[in-house]
Length: 71
Image (cartoon, rainbow, N blue to C red; front, side):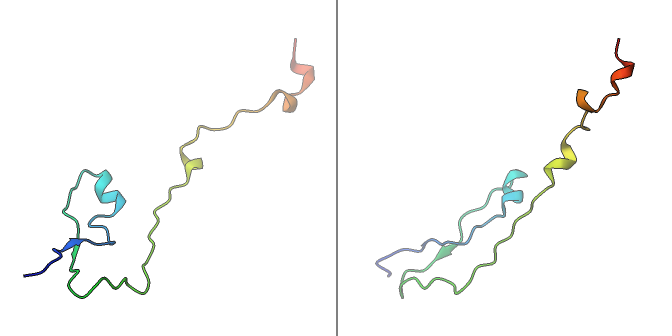
């Protein structure tokens, strides 16, 4: 019927977090019958964690130690 079969489109089937959780999904297909028309805008979702929350507590440097307490 169609010379060009449906093909994988630009929209992801899963969010990165879903994929990292082990989920799997087939790609979202788009028809090439009338030519591809990209969406006007795409929403970008970013889930960022604060890397400083996972760092161990900082230690004091020797420059901040009182010299009189050293042997």
